[in-house]
Image 1: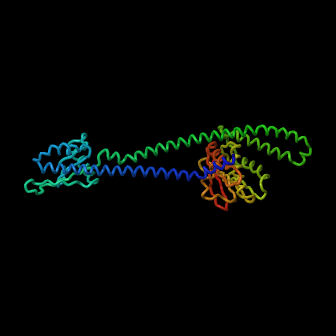
Image 2: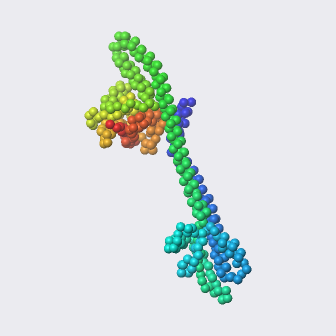
Image 3: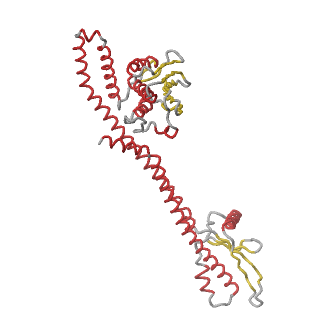
Length: 403
């Protein structure tokens, strides 16, 4: 069951980018469909308003040309005056404004009113072609005047035109807030799981470590055990277990940071690792400036370095070199570069290395680098990232700490 859960977790994280693309494509399809459907409605309403303006223009034309007709009252009341929503401006052949409708001019007077009308007219000219009205002499049937009706979208049509974009903006804002809230709640939940697991692990380790310490005291009285040096190595392992327990105990608590010399901390880790790894692996530590210090929590910081070194050992398959460079940067920053001559990381995987569940090993849960990132960035307020990585040549991680 544990293995199944592990595989599900790895699958989710490894396909996270694909899931994001699927969500993005679906969102785009919904957005395009919404805009497309709204545009159909807009075109239909535009066509309807155009017919209304044409009817309005024909009504004006008929009213003037048939001044004695008995239908004038009906035409005037039911057609001309019924245009109470579509902004229109009537101009003559010399482009002088002779009439206008449905334009809000309450805040304008005098020259400002005229300028406002001219501005509206220019906008209308850029929007639609005008509708021509021909006024004819009743007796000779000759055209004696030509006027033009300019118009633009009604307020309702304008609202409908911009509605899908406003709607999509609101949906996008809501989705963004929901996404951030979900991520935050998920992060809080993950933190609680991490902390609970770490605390329980520390608690469970306490009893066997106490028992091992008692057995150590018992073995110290055995002369044979003293002679072959087993006691010293066992003591190192017991102390290591105590450090590990302390590390797990610190997870979830605000760790105490203090100025520590970085090189001795790293040398302690190397001294413990060397007897326990292949003798064909060479480890070198170089401090470009002597006595470099940084604010760290020693047990947690050593955990990170040890994890990176173990990963380097695994990537080299028992043969190669690990180099650790410590240098002082600008703005009170300290850089620790940990590199190897291993198989490197494919470029397609570089962004995934710190994700829970990511691993290139046949064994392992892929949590080491996730913990390392949490320790450096959450507890030490620093940075950890891949500085360089080339397949077949090796990988270099960089840790950035504050002095």
